[in-house]
Image (cartoon, rainbow, N blue to C red; front, side, top):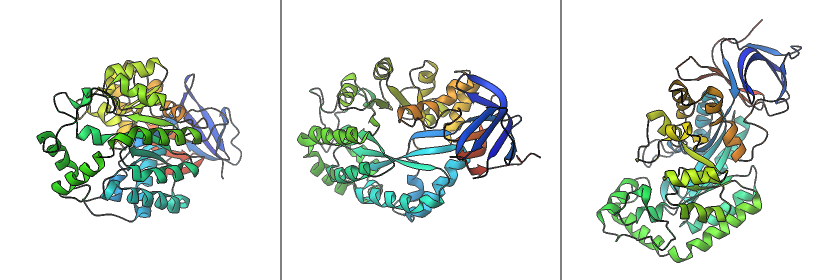
Length: 407
């Protein structure tokens, strides 16, 4: 690999910012300060910001590349390469694709999930950044457990997110979804299958599963019969995750009881908590709290949940995820900086240092000698949106835009 010297950039270092030079060699950050230029490709970083590349802890926008129209599927390798180019152009060098493994047929079926895993493996030699998997497991999908256990035995180690949209869909509607009872607690009440709220939920997802509303309801009833055995299934998957050293997350927690349940199984990351009390308690215990970058970028949650911007400013949310829109990651940081919700270094850590730490990726997410050279050189005007001019993934150029060569 040709060494790279990035000269004169404003570098986001763990201890603060510095206008300096940095040398990359053999895929790692070799020197900072006054590095040797011998044999290196010299790139002009003057007026630009050099930051750790983005680590996306949860993104499901890849689904639009897999299925760009309802029921229309693209070859997996084509989808993987499409997503790869977008990630690189945004400065995302590590992406955990939130691969939903559900009991539904169609896009989120176990068979489609297995096919996407195979496609990523096949495309890997031609991909510019690192693609990893979040096994976003719908806990009623018992048919997914075998695939989860196989995926945990392969590399690189995926993360596991525990989702229960089944109970959420069938919940009694007297309280908002953000305040619903713990799904396996004494306070949970299910609605009848002909409840208008249940019907509305089914109507919104049936097309994704390529089912009529009535056929979806029939499938939902079959799956709901599994409910007594779900806590045991969760315990099995969590035990497999702990044995593999997989980072584990609980999704959409609305009650302290919910977070405590998954914490006891080893899930140390609260992903999209719906209650401020849950989020604050998790951070108080030293756990990571993930909220959506689209939420922060748009100025609020599209379902009326917590304000990501407020939670980041208060230090409660320490990680932003792309969720359903990859470009929201750098753009949200830009908006938060423009609103003076924090300094650039602290805000950028929400998409780099903090997710890397939470996921156990100790070799990236910071700029320091010896670490993996996952770096992004940003055009970041004051009050504006950061735009990647250069993205390095393990020292290799994954994206280059504009004239950066320096004599």
